[in-house]
Amino acid sequence: MGRIRTIKPDFFKHEGLYEAEVETGLPLRLAFIGLWTASDREGRFNWRPRALKTDVLPYDEVDFSRVLDALATRGFIVKYRVGMADFGSIPSFPRHQVVNHRESASILPPPPETIEEIDPSATREPRVQGTPGGKGKEGKGKEGKDSSHADASLPSIASSTTTPQPAVPLSGEASSWTGSAEERFWVLAATAEAKGIARSQLGQLANQLGGDFDRALGIVVDAMAARGPRAYLARIITNIRSETAGPVAVVDPDTPTWVTEARSQGYPVELEDGRWRMAGALYDDAGEQVGN
Image (cartoon, rainbow, N blue to C red):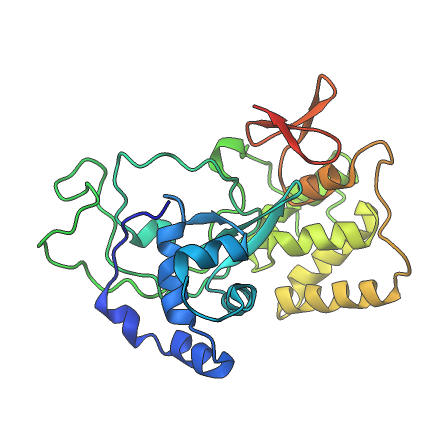
């Protein structure tokens, strides 16, 4: 079901989105606006191209999978997977849409990575919940100041699941902090993100190395010391991938692959009565939701 959303006149002057549309020949601007109405109050949606097309571009003869991919590769939206399901997120959405305070809370999991966003969805500054004009109806108030410039990133994990972590030394191989290599690796993640390294890269590195967190720690420390940490780590991951033959080894053979992947992306997943609990829901070994 579509929701009422707002749009700011400056949206139509966004050169990057216009150039992407010209380059691809796809109706990206109209599709992007339509995705706002298909998203929940956090800017999240189920990544189902065929269903989304019926809501966003029902009469256009266009492959909506290509539309979504074009927006994602250019940073306007983000595609991510939790369990066996694919989701999408509009990183700039929560800051710029005026959401009706009665709109239901999001039931979709948040994206698991720090997002570098491009922000053409800016409409106006969000109002404080409960203030006049915040009921989701079009009003006659003045537009807020232009907020079309994007922040560098968003939190990688929902605050409700984030716990404070001790500081980690940046010299050597982070060996002076006690704990397992895996614990030190994920504690170091917060510092790495501050250096511009995406959490998704850290998950990819851990997967490519088959759970060799000692080696992963050294690579991340070297990346943070490089002139361009994110680009440096991306090259290392590419090199490791090209050198690795066959599937990536699973750290624990008794743990489903999707659980290992979710954990590598920062999601807490715990075994509970033979089922896996994550983000307030229960999943079976195949990654299918079986309860709450």
